Structures are given as structure tokens and as C-alpha cells.
Image 1 (tube, rainbow, N blue to C red):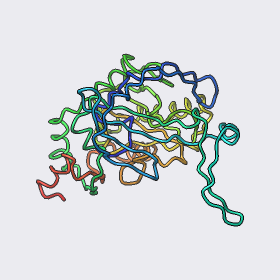
Image 2 (tube, one colour):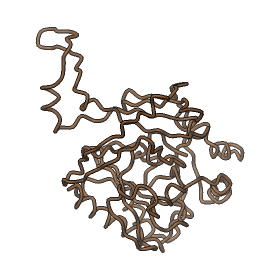
Image 3 (cartoon, helix red, strand yellow):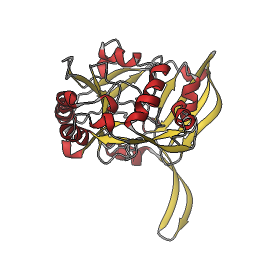
Length: 328
């Protein structure tokens, strides 16, 4: 439903694995990775049809097209410049002078190929919903009361039957088992912690991990009551401990939050580096986990009755439902 560049959180986003990275080594405390790639380039057969959206600020582009006879969306994103590559960057690049004026000069720099990677995400087969998700759309802030949730939002969610099979695959270790950073297997308070696809794991500045709960009957913030406090407190404590142990990043440098509306309806918690302006971390959508815990301690039914606000795109089906009953 909500947001744009959230590559781990796409509804039904089963990763297109044919060109997957076949080896990842986490052999230092900073979470840097060594990678080997399959030689086959499945994108050589990709036929672009249209650019759905792009961002000069985020340095990414979303492209709709076809892979063979299947609809596909390809996301290209420039990776951040890492401090440990600067020596190679300066010594191994070619410079082309564009302008010089007194002490100022500008150049086009062509870095070595291994420092000029473009992170690529492939969604295939892509549905009409995926295509619409990545298109530029006008957005509106929705006001949802507890009654609105029961009468509008919940029936819409149940009718749509949003697929979370890819989440179940992770929990059952049928997919991405090698990417798991930490797991508490307890069925009541346990969770799996793994990197979000937006994070290439090559630097800590844009660290992004997701904690997915083992319980399968909690769709979102709206389902949480005080009985879930042990689960939330466990995620907060053990998630931070795991990140500190694995990546050396303390809790004081983390932003830990839930989305509402979420992009998929299986409860999960976001862990990002505090300095990283991750998509969807704004006040209109993100709810700090510590605030959620405190609110439920004060009122066991807080999220059952509280009016919540969230952004929706103009083409979102839920937006249409709110318009139909004149709630917008």
C-alpha cells in the first residue's frame, strides 16, 4: 500500500532470484560483504516500455517492461560511495575537465568498474499493482478512526487477500535463510531479523534491517494490545543487541519503528541507522517502537481506538474506499 522505494516491503514482493548473488560473507564486524555473481545477465533480454518514476535525489529509476513474455519492473539505484574505496577511487579513475575558474574546477570522473556498481532489483512477474505502486502519484493524508478501521480498512484488507507467502517462506527457512542475522524461534515472542533489500550491506550509514514476527495473526499496529507487550519488548531488546553484536552499532544510533499503513500485513519492525532518511520514516507513517510500547502500557486498547493518520496514493484501492463513504 504505502510508500515508494521500499524494496523489502513490496506487497507480495517475491524477489526475482535468477540473477541472485550466490555468496555472501559476513566476516568482519561491520557487516561488509564479499560477493560473487552469476555470469548470466537476465536483463539482456529486458525490453523497457516506460519509466514509471525516477529521483535525482535518491539516484534511482523505476522501469516497466518485459522479460521474455512476462511483465517486469526493474529498479536501478546508484550505491553510496564508501570511505574504504576512496583510495582506489582517486588512484584508478579517469578525469575529464568540464570547467575551471580560479580555484574552482569541475570534472566528469569515470571510476573503475568495481566502484561503479548499480544496485538492481527485479520484480517479475510484475502485476498491475506493482506497476501502479512505482508510478508517480498524488498523495493524500487519511484520517482513520478506530471505527473507520473496522468498517473500511479491515474489510478492504480481508477482501484483497494480500499475499504474504514470501514472508512465510522466510519464517519457514524456505527462502533467504542465509540472510538471517538473528532469530528467536519462540512462537509467541520470537522473530527473524534480516537485512532489508534496500541495504546493500556495504556500509553502516544506510543500515536497514527488518524484524518479522513468528506470530501470523498480527496484521498491523491496529491488532496490537497489551498482551503483545512481551513480543514488542523482546524485539526491541534482542534486535538492538543483535545489531550491536553483528555491526557494532549501539541502540543510540538506531531508529526502530513500525509503519502504518504497512506495505504487507504481517507484523514487522524496521531497524535503520538514525542518520539514514529511509523511505517511510516520516511522522505521517512511522511509529517508534518505544512509543508503541509505552502507549500500550498506558492503555491496553490504545491502537484499537486511537485515530491514526497515514498517506495514501490517489490510485490506492483503500483511498477509493475512504472517498466512497465521504471520509476524504
